[in-house]
Image 1 (cartoon, one colour):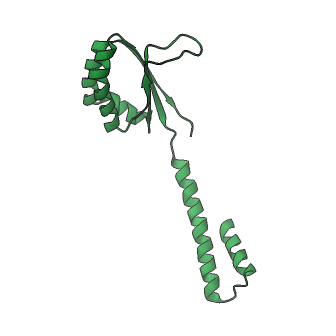
Image 2 (cartoon, one colour):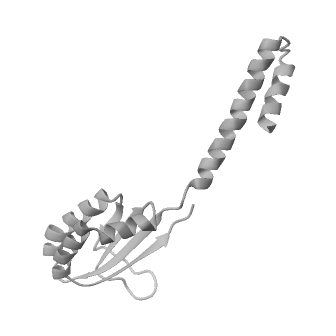
Image 3 (cartoon, one colour):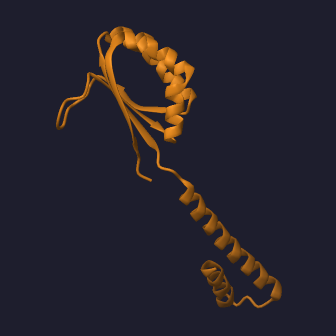
Amino acid sequence: MFIALLADESCALRGVRSENENSICVRNGNGLALGATAVHALQGQTRPPIYYVAEVDVTDLDGYIKEFVPKAATSAEAQGGRTLAAGQKVTAIEGTPPRNRVVVMRWESLEQLRAWRESARYKEARKIGDKYAASVRAFAVEGLP
Protein backbone atom coordinates (compact mmCIF):
# COMPACT_ATOMS: atom_id res chain seq x y z
CA MET A 1 0.00 0.00 0.00
CA PHE A 2 2.89 2.35 0.71
CA ILE A 3 4.04 1.95 -2.90
CA ALA A 4 0.49 2.65 -4.13
CA LEU A 5 0.37 5.81 -2.03
CA LEU A 6 3.69 6.91 -3.48
CA ALA A 7 2.33 6.31 -6.97
CA ASP A 8 -0.76 8.42 -6.13
CA GLU A 9 1.54 11.18 -4.79
CA SER A 10 3.59 10.98 -7.97
CA CYS A 11 0.48 11.37 -10.11
CA ALA A 12 -0.61 14.42 -8.11
CA LEU A 13 2.85 15.98 -8.33
CA ARG A 14 2.89 15.55 -12.10
CA GLY A 15 -0.38 17.47 -12.29
CA VAL A 16 -2.46 14.51 -13.44
CA ARG A 17 -6.03 15.73 -13.10
CA SER A 18 -8.36 13.67 -15.23
CA GLU A 19 -10.26 10.76 -13.68
CA ASN A 20 -8.92 8.39 -16.34
CA GLU A 21 -5.25 9.27 -15.80
CA ASN A 22 -5.63 8.97 -12.02
CA SER A 23 -7.08 5.49 -12.36
CA ILE A 24 -4.11 4.48 -14.52
CA CYS A 25 -1.71 5.87 -11.94
CA VAL A 26 -3.50 4.05 -9.12
CA ARG A 27 -3.56 0.79 -11.06
CA ASN A 28 0.16 1.09 -11.74
CA GLY A 29 0.80 1.79 -8.05
CA ASN A 30 -1.30 -1.19 -6.98
CA GLY A 31 0.56 -3.35 -9.51
CA LEU A 32 3.85 -2.29 -7.96
CA ALA A 33 2.56 -3.12 -4.50
CA LEU A 34 1.28 -6.51 -5.65
CA GLY A 35 4.56 -7.28 -7.44
CA ALA A 36 6.63 -6.33 -4.39
CA THR A 37 4.47 -8.55 -2.18
CA ALA A 38 4.80 -11.49 -4.59
CA VAL A 39 8.59 -11.16 -4.76
CA HIS A 40 8.78 -11.02 -0.97
CA ALA A 41 6.60 -14.15 -0.65
CA LEU A 42 8.70 -16.07 -3.20
CA GLN A 43 11.92 -15.14 -1.42
CA GLY A 44 10.45 -16.43 1.83
CA GLN A 45 9.85 -19.83 0.20
CA THR A 46 13.45 -20.33 -0.91
CA ARG A 47 15.17 -23.09 1.02
CA PRO A 48 18.91 -23.08 1.49
CA PRO A 49 20.83 -25.64 -0.57
CA ILE A 50 22.33 -28.79 0.89
CA TYR A 51 26.04 -29.50 0.44
CA TYR A 52 27.19 -33.12 0.41
CA VAL A 53 30.81 -33.81 1.32
CA ALA A 54 32.42 -37.22 0.91
CA GLU A 55 35.92 -38.25 1.92
CA VAL A 56 37.01 -41.42 0.16
CA ASP A 57 40.02 -43.59 0.95
CA VAL A 58 40.69 -44.78 -2.61
CA THR A 59 42.92 -47.85 -2.97
CA ASP A 60 42.95 -48.06 -6.80
CA LEU A 61 42.61 -44.56 -8.22
CA ASP A 62 42.71 -45.59 -11.88
CA GLY A 63 39.89 -48.14 -11.50
CA TYR A 64 37.89 -45.79 -9.28
CA ILE A 65 38.04 -42.91 -11.77
CA LYS A 66 37.43 -45.03 -14.87
CA GLU A 67 34.69 -47.32 -13.59
CA PHE A 68 32.95 -45.68 -10.65
CA VAL A 69 33.14 -41.91 -11.07
CA PRO A 70 31.25 -41.64 -14.40
CA LYS A 71 28.40 -43.84 -13.15
CA ALA A 72 28.12 -42.03 -9.81
CA ALA A 73 28.25 -38.62 -11.49
CA THR A 74 25.52 -39.40 -14.04
CA SER A 75 23.31 -40.94 -11.35
CA ALA A 76 23.67 -37.78 -9.23
CA GLU A 77 22.96 -35.47 -12.17
CA ALA A 78 19.85 -37.51 -13.01
CA GLN A 79 18.57 -36.86 -9.47
CA GLY A 80 19.36 -33.13 -9.55
CA GLY A 81 22.78 -33.06 -7.90
CA ARG A 82 25.65 -30.91 -9.09
CA THR A 83 29.30 -31.70 -8.43
CA LEU A 84 31.15 -28.58 -7.31
CA ALA A 85 34.56 -30.11 -6.55
CA ALA A 86 36.10 -33.57 -6.76
CA GLY A 87 39.68 -34.68 -6.69
CA GLN A 88 42.80 -35.82 -4.94
CA LYS A 89 44.47 -32.43 -4.42
CA VAL A 90 43.23 -31.96 -0.88
CA THR A 91 45.04 -29.69 1.55
CA ALA A 92 44.56 -30.06 5.29
CA ILE A 93 44.22 -26.68 6.97
CA GLU A 94 43.61 -27.85 10.54
CA GLY A 95 43.02 -31.16 12.29
CA THR A 96 43.16 -34.66 10.86
CA PRO A 97 43.81 -34.63 7.12
CA PRO A 98 40.91 -35.82 4.93
CA ARG A 99 41.09 -39.04 2.92
CA ASN A 100 42.89 -39.02 -0.42
CA ARG A 101 39.77 -38.05 -2.45
CA VAL A 102 37.10 -35.49 -1.59
CA VAL A 103 33.83 -34.75 -3.37
CA VAL A 104 31.58 -31.73 -2.75
CA MET A 105 28.10 -31.65 -4.30
CA ARG A 106 25.15 -29.26 -4.17
CA TRP A 107 21.55 -30.41 -3.78
CA GLU A 108 18.27 -28.51 -3.56
CA SER A 109 17.15 -30.45 -0.49
CA LEU A 110 18.17 -33.21 1.88
CA GLU A 111 15.27 -35.28 0.53
CA GLN A 112 16.72 -34.99 -2.99
CA LEU A 113 20.15 -36.08 -1.74
CA ARG A 114 18.68 -39.04 0.13
CA ALA A 115 16.64 -40.07 -2.92
CA TRP A 116 19.88 -40.18 -4.93
CA ARG A 117 21.69 -42.26 -2.31
CA GLU A 118 18.76 -44.69 -2.19
CA SER A 119 18.33 -44.92 -5.97
CA ALA A 120 18.99 -48.23 -7.70
CA ARG A 121 21.33 -46.48 -10.13
CA TYR A 122 23.56 -45.12 -7.36
CA LYS A 123 23.52 -48.40 -5.42
CA GLU A 124 24.73 -50.25 -8.53
CA ALA A 125 27.49 -47.69 -9.06
CA ARG A 126 28.45 -47.92 -5.39
CA LYS A 127 29.08 -51.65 -5.71
CA ILE A 128 31.76 -50.79 -8.29
CA GLY A 129 33.16 -47.98 -6.14
CA ASP A 130 33.47 -50.27 -3.13
CA LYS A 131 35.93 -52.41 -5.09
CA TYR A 132 38.31 -49.45 -5.31
CA ALA A 133 37.77 -47.67 -2.00
CA ALA A 134 38.65 -48.85 1.50
CA SER A 135 36.23 -46.46 3.22
CA VAL A 136 33.91 -43.52 2.67
CA ARG A 137 32.93 -40.83 5.14
CA ALA A 138 30.05 -38.70 3.86
CA PHE A 139 27.90 -35.99 5.41
CA ALA A 140 25.55 -33.17 4.46
CA VAL A 141 25.45 -29.59 5.66
CA GLU A 142 22.75 -27.01 5.08
CA GLY A 143 23.91 -23.97 3.16
CA LEU A 144 23.12 -20.39 4.05
CA PRO A 145 19.88 -18.89 2.72
